[in-house]
Image 1 (cartoon, rainbow over the protein chains, first blue to last red):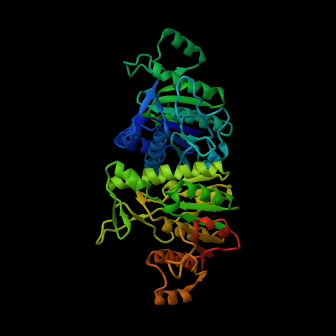
Image 2 (cartoon, each protein chain N blue to C red):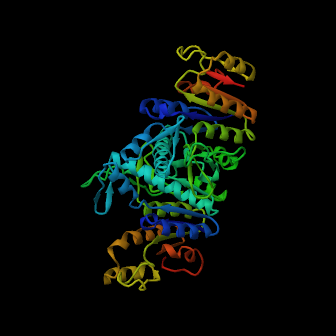
Image 3 (spheres, rainbow over the protein chains, first blue to last red):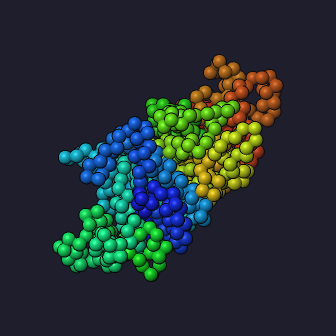
Length: 260
Length: 260
């Protein structure tokens, strides 16, 4: 089993949470990949540099100055600090972007109503699995920052959830893959006010029912869509759970929500 | 032959020079590694962030804020832009620091008269050649930023010339290696005022004579010491030459100064 594990910005932004998560991640046995979000550090650095952060529908608008900031912060500061910390915990990490070894060639999002700027979308089937296999088979643990490239010299800002599902799908052709989205809830909740209302299993059938009942929070829908897309394209299992449960979620005693 | 090529800050800081250099580097056939310096971008970004750059004897003092800046700028912005540009030129680059795959474990420089802060020195024999061989043999081109780590979670700022010679020595046990220092002169000059006074060959014998004559500029001495150290430790050839001549210096028609 290869574990493809995405950890979100809330963990990245908190040194104590991050350290605990990385210790748990380092203890996951066998082949694994980490994909990290960016967190608020890019916004703080951008603010100090006098570069305004702009969002439309929750997505960062990535102009020329902003792509430099996220390349610095996601690809440099966050990624290399995670690599150094994993090394200290005995995990032989190697930090990457989608530009490295041409693993994730992407396309700049076309301008329609909104110009998202230097944001990359990943065409289906575009991920190069071979370099990742090379690293995994050598006992290395790839750590991806949420950056890709357009093949013409331009780095692109790319959603970390999407990178995670794209990598999981590419590896699904070669290994059984469990894709795990770690976030700040214990799983997909039936009632967002109640942390113990975790829905343990979501499949296509009850997903439609849950949608019809309005039982799912808007924020979780893109994650679920990514999850189903991964399952439809050869990923064995997708789990959505708390960052604290990553160690449990890499065993048979699953916490959180299993999508299949 | 493996070419281990270091390019300095003056090329990194100039978009036109950098693009020309990367086109030439991409055209070098066979196995190769690039090590880039930092250039002045870190100073500019640090200035904007209100972090003062301090130097003693030409070496940057790397305090806690400064190591974050150089991790961002060298490991993120500069390294990933070079990787994306090499990819666009058909060179399958993979950007690394010495923390990645634990390739260059270093030690924080001991505090004596001067506290250099988070600066790493590389103990002899400390470089892990195996992950580099893995990448080279898979047709990948490692691109190193001048960063290492202490194995305990701390990134360290490390001189790019030293990283280049350490990598060359580690690979010298497995391949014939030519180490090439690219800079803004045509080679080691007998007269720094005269660009055409290149000394084509320096060996131990004439090095002592040149030193005694006072024919060598102070700035070139650390490069020459690095060069002799590399030769003494199994590197086949060291070349010091102009960044414009990198293509020629990866053939038999050598320009610049050959150290042997």
